[in-house]
Image (cartoon, rainbow, N blue to C red; front, top):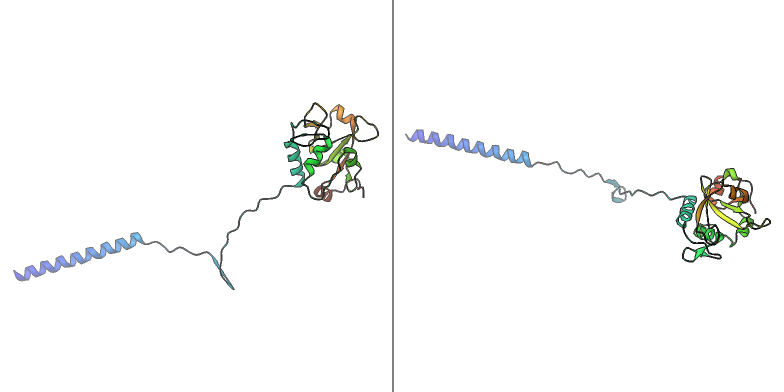
Length: 201
């Protein structure tokens, strides 16, 4: 009887130990996670080099900035002698305002002075690029008396005359075709990229 009791106790203890080991093994298996891998690169003379590059936004071209600024003035009333959106623009006042933040461009006040200024370049009508200045003789056959900013697709932004607002017009229209005089290139960016008719130096 005593022998049988000891045998039963031994079998029960062995079973309990086996169950405990199985449970522990199961817990270890379920909770195991691989350690994170450090991808930072050690550099001589420094503890660690961490890569944290940020994307760099491309800068917009001068021509793009000028044309967008010109477009933003559309709807501003014409005012003779005006040089700001608040007071209004005449044609040369608009051009001065649009180009005032462009490096290496310092424009005189009137359309005739812009047309005659040194340092700009003649541009054939077929070679116009956004940012070029287009000139007209409307009331005076001897002197240039109107100027606009070419924005591409044969169109230009300008301040027409009293009673009107800054707008986009088409160079191929009969009126502007009749009064068109010349074009000048003044943006350093486009001057550097193209060999145009010649400079006034």
